[in-house]
Image (cartoon, rainbow, N blue to C red; front, side, top):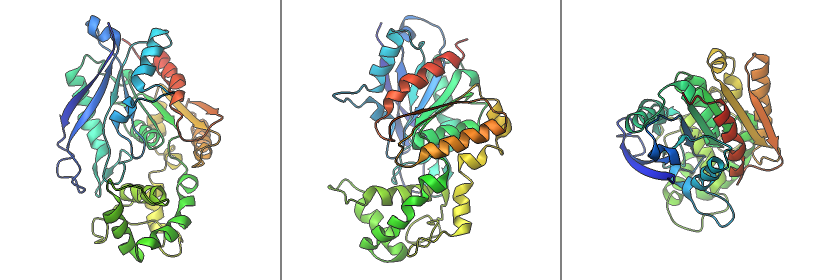
Length: 338
């Protein structure tokens, strides 16, 4: 038998009526290993969540010199490097590029979407092992952040967590972009009106995008998740810095820091100790300096007596899906198949 990737339509209750009017009916992709079709047994489940501007279907993109997720899993299973497991690829994309997998009054309840809807939906529709020791949450970049966030808060859902280059130590991975933002956004006007103009003129399919597009979008995308403000008329969030000088605004920046995994280890110490796998992975040439955050996160884990695996590799932030070869072996060795 061959493996399959199937796409199911899921109608979300928690995303219906979301502030951005993003779709509430979404595709959920599921990788079914070869033995799923030839047996009646139940399988562990890995939830593979996408990074910023990504969504589940992108894992199936075909490339000339790299494998998509189906090709990769097929090879790993065929060569007996991993055992058969289901891999679920949800869609948590938003108008601003992503959700960070948190509940936000400006984007929607994407944390609830994952925990209260997607996990039960998969368990209802497939032969799964419905227990936390048989579930893993894994992602890269913002998906890696989401993996940390959800595993820390819901060890009764996921007992295994893998983060590849996941956003952490916010002063290193985000703050460096703020001085550039205040200059780049001036192209679109003054103050928050410029932000509104950028959103109206650039969040569309028009090409080519300006050089500053991603830096502006990334800062907006994080602000809408970490410091939402539905009362602001120009946009529905607050920036954590003065839009002209780039000086940090402590009361707003502190809202961001409440989401920083480095700063959450002690708060969720008891939950983190319940996890049977914490795998932290990052390139030493990460363009967002996330290798520093990964080291800080692991140092906090060590000081709190929490077991983890930390690996580094000689590469940057982009196009490092080959690291799934390493992480899926750890998942296979630690996830429960009974």
